[in-house]
Image 1 (spheres, one colour):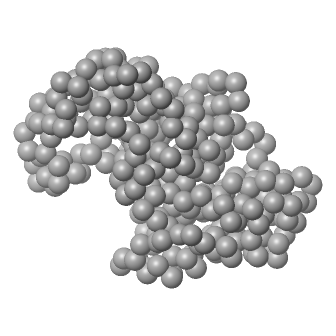
Image 2: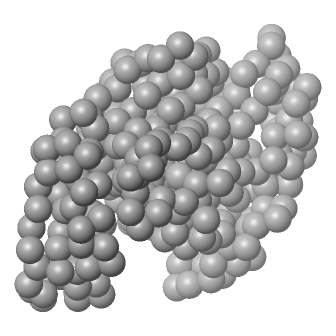
Image 3: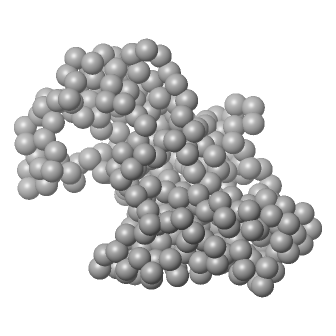
Length: 284
């Protein structure tokens, strides 16, 4: 289908983008890489009168260090994230998840911030961002504010970004030296995950000192598997030790049921994938 007619605005600064949002209000829609929005427009599930393109705002691109954090601009492409040495060293699970995200064409067009702001619970980046304790910097007419990942994902396709606000960057605490794994279960390559697990682990010898685990497609938002994290602390990095902790992966989750599997099937997958991801992250 062909999208409904709309006006197009391409500001070159965050300030101009916010001014355009303020001017057009509910009639406007932000576009980043367009990999989520364009299909929606083509199917006429949304018909904004104005589309505000962030693609010409250079300050929203790039990856840098800021003390104990990595800062990833919202308009940084998936390709640039997955190939960046800083990301692979300090936030490895983000790079691994981006490796599994769609195909090369989409990774060269889609953006890190756009995917997170879309807030699809089956998206590959929400669980890693949640597991690493990312913070989201949001700009509005009243200035900027920072929202932790635990509060950023509100519900299905809903985030803490207001109608008159723009996500500008994501701050990710460095997890230098931590092992990592993104374990994704799909029936067809490049499909949305039926279930996926993002795990990053710090070991002390043969023991798991700390673990961070996020679940994809196990609820209306990405889910932090805190029961697993607590159970893994101080556990030997062995098959038996990790298996017992991984059995708690589905606690507190509310997975969907669809043609790919019912809720119980997804709960089972979560335990299996968590065990695999944690063992791999721990180097086992």
